[in-house]
Length: 317
Image (cartoon, rainbow, N blue to C red):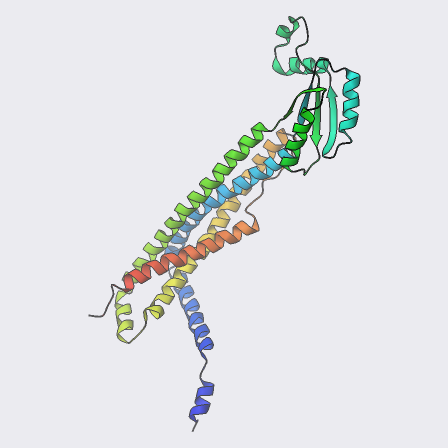
């Protein structure tokens, strides 16, 4: 006969029993998911569409941010020279500017060149011909070194504006600041939309699990009669919610990928019109992992919230 000591040694420890129990639930819930594949996929598609909307907006914002950064590195500062500044003085100033740190290049545009360019671009050439003198000043355009931080560029423009030859120094980036402000607002809206749709995922999973609980009400009553704990009864429903969220995340990724693929060529054609070789980028790895994690967590929360609420109402009579 096997002694009590030997029997205790053969008995699995707590960690082994815990792992075996969860492994059984994984296999059981996956097989049940497969048996009800059509209905389960419908729920997963609803979850996927819900998760795909904020993920698509996030992808759009990241692409616009990337384009905006490339525009930011090509910004130029304009030094409008005083009328008393001669071309020789302007050329001497350019030679000094090119030696300054943070300045990549400096180009002189004379008053006549400024007038010719304005006539070509504005369409008011005939009206400007009626003027007795050229009202436009000479300009020096300065290209900052790529990668220079915004505070450094701002300080450089302020310093250059105090030069005796310069009337006004201006950094042409007001439109870009407005774009960044709009993008910041959109990012906040994406977070709000993601929060609201996250609640929608919880409700979707919760309602599906509620129907599953009602279908197994008699089975749950029997399990409680033989002493099963709420945690034991809750476990398969939690795994079911997890699978809903995981498959929903995969469907959301597929939808975002399809949208990026469909828009990549038109986006490339639009970029080519602006002499850019930018290519539309899909959902990055970090955002993809967050989306999958969000689907899993939201599915688990929806299942836990629904099962915990209904298990209190199901008691043996």
